Length: 174
Length: 343
Image (cartoon, each protein chain N blue to C red):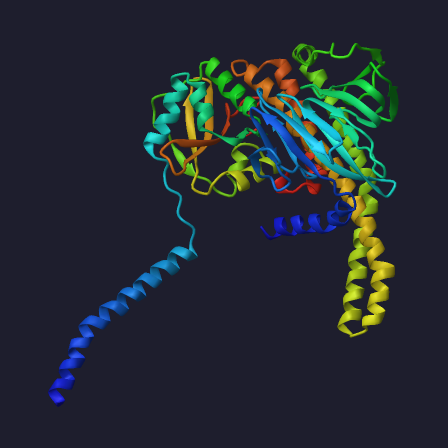
C-alpha cells in the first residue's frame, strides 16, 4: 500500500508540474505584454516601396488613396480630400523624385510632431490621428529632404498620415 | 491625457446648461456625393439621411457633394459642393443664440420664423449677419472674403463694428478684417460662386502677402473678442472655485440646509454666468480655429506647393514670415481655449 501511494504521487508530478509551469509562464507573458506597449516595428519594405514607386511614377491618385482622411502637411491639418489631392498633384507635377539610397525610418515618439511643426495643432494631430506603430520615413528627393509619417494597417497597403518638406526651406517650418 | 479628459469634462459641464436651453433639431434630409460630418469629438463620418447635426459639428462637402439640412420642418439649409459649414452657439445679452457659419464655399438658407423662436445669426470668416424672415445665400471665398445675397426678407451684415442692411435683391461683399463694402443690386440666381471665388483666388495670387495681412487683421479682431471676455471669465472662475470650496466645507460639516442656500445664492448664479462666458470664449476660439485652418492653412498650402522649386522667392519668404507671426498670436491667445478634439 505504501508503495502504491508513492507511485501515485510520482505519476501525478510529471503531469501536474508542467501544467502549472505552463500556466505560470503564460500568465507571466500576458502580464509582461500588458505592462508594456507593443514595440513599434519597422515599416515593411514593400510598403515603403509602394510609396516611393507611386512618387517616382507620378501616380498622384495612388498617393491620395494611400493618404489618411485627416492629413498633416507641415503645420497644417488637411481634412478636405480636395486639399490632400491638390498637395499630391502639385508634388508630382513639380517632379518630386526619391533617390535610390537607403530610406531611414524611425519610431514615432511624443516629440515627433516637432519635426513637422512646433504647434498645438500638429501636436494634437499626432496624438489623435497617428498610430503609435507608425514610422517617420526620411526621403531624399530632388526637391530636398521630405519626411513622411506612415504605417500599415490591416491590409498590406500603407497609410500615409502626413508629409513635411522640403525640410530646411523658407516654408519648411518643420 | 488627464489634462485632456479634464478639459473635455470642463467643457461639457460649462456648456451643458446653455446647450439645453436651446436644443433644436437639425438633421440631414437629403445629400448626394461626398459629404462628411466632423463632430465635436473630432470624429469624421459620412453623412446619411437622418444624420443629426449638433452644436459644434462641421459638415464638409466634396467637389461632388451637396447636403440639405432641415430644422424643425421649417428652416432649410443647403450646403453646396466644396463647402465647409459649422453649427455653433454663443450667448448674447444672456440669451443663447445659434450661429450657422459658412466657413468655405456657399450655403443657401431659407428661414421661416416660428413663434417663440429666435432666428439664428449667419457667420462667415469675415462677418456675422442678423436675419429676419429671410432667404439668402452666403458665399465664403478661399481668401476669407464673404458675399451675402438676399432673395427674401432682410439681413443686417456686421463686420468690424459696422453694419450694412440688405433688402431683397441686394448684396454686399466683406473682406476679412474690414467693414462691409458698399451694397449693390443683384438679380436672383445671377451670382456665379465659382466665378466670384476665382476673382478672390486671382487677387490672392497677385498679392498673397496683402491677402494674408487682411486675414491677420481678422484674426486680431477675433483674438480681441477673446481678450475682452477673458479677464471677467478668469475672475468669475476663480470666484466659482472659491465658492465651491466653501460649499464643500459646509457639506462636510453636515450643514446641509446652509449649503443648499449657499449653492442657490452664490454658486449657481456664478456657474450660469461663467458657463455663458465660456460658451462665448469657445465660440470666438472656434471661429479663429476655422480661420486658421480653412483660410490661412489653405493659403499656406497654396503658397508652398506653388513654390516647391522656388523656396527662396521673396514673396514666399515674406508670406511665411507673416504667417509665422499670425500663427504665433493664434497659438498664444486662442489655443488655450481649444481642445485636441477641435482639430
